[in-house]
Length: 426
Image (cartoon, rainbow, N blue to C red; front, side, top):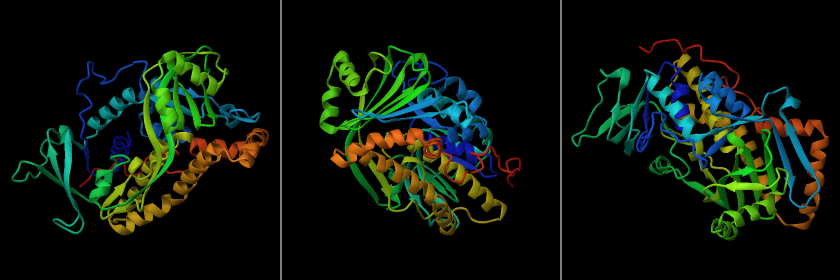
């Protein structure tokens, strides 16, 4: 999702882009959308700022019919009286965010990629070697094993092929959007620090007895945070964080015992929980690289920062990175600067540092504060939530952070398209 979004966003600039994808999304599909509408489809929450980014990119009209609005968020601490409520109406907005199904959003991005004449798609393809020093000091050369090359509107392009039949391509900058355990980061010898939260997340879709009415819930429990996001057909996407041992235990439960355990943790704000789908479990940790760039290589998305899902900020932080990157590359092109050299990448990293630090620190602090069973902290959490609910200034700051509007906004976030988007590359 991050790599595809980055390619489409950058395609508005007068540059040529190669998108390298290892998995063909059409394999195994039974329809032209490459997607399913199953009960178990996975979802991600977009902040209001992320929705603005997709609107500016011109993709929101296709995504919006799939989306479910988050009109309010209810935050509570199990066993404590205090709670906080965030409402879109308080900020003159239709929604605080939107929840989108990944399997149906992917094909929309895929089509947009194929429609961009300055994106060349290599899929399925695998990067086997990266060399920033080949040919010239202003390029990075990538060696690919390619099963398919779709040049679509650029059939006349000459792509160099080595003696083994592999494709070699070069460019000013390589964006590594290959996830938490980034192979490109390893190739660039970038070390990553992993800090375990000693929690596992159990992911599933559930159906409550009562209508969710576009409400999202964040509930802190003794085991860890529990989040419910609204979906279509009155389903909700569950992210239930708990200790590793307890997660293994609940994963083994049959449907009704699982629902009983979930009901005990969440309560009855939505009545009885009457259905649960397939469950998935994965460990939670904070992954941070020692730096986000190497020679002509920049980490984005989960490769640059993998966060705890407590506040749903990981993917949204990645989208803000993309919006900022579009701005700085746009300015670099206008001033005839090299947007792949170390000076430029250092400047980009410094520009993003404040947002990274605030988001990572806030997420990490929330996990530790609400997972702690240290008595003085547990005693204060309820009153703290109640205080936030009664103080408009505090609620506004929390809501702005959740919506992605707490820091400096890039052009895509503010609805601004590059002035150079209509220029043709020479």
